[in-house]
Length: 65
Image (cartoon, rainbow, N blue to C red; front, side, top):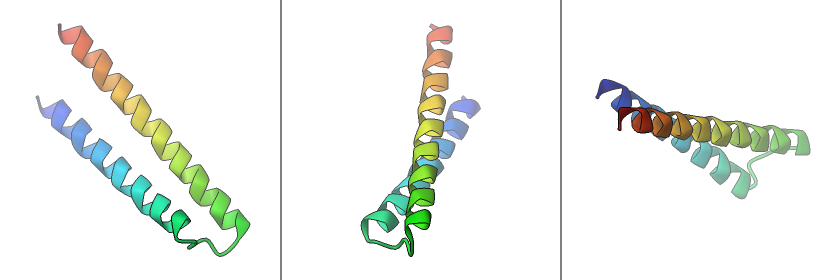
C-alpha cells in the first residue's frame, strides 16, 4: 500500500534526525546549556512524533484485519 511506504519513509526521516541530534548531544556539540536543552527538546519531540506515527500505523493495520 502506498500509505505504508510513505509512513516508512517518514519514520526513517524522523529516526535519522533524532540520531543526528543524539550524536551531537553525545559529542558535546551544544555551545551552551540553552542550546543543549533545545536539542534535547527536539529529540523528545521527534520521539513523540515517531511514537504517534507507529500507533497510527498499528491502528490502521488492526482496522484492516
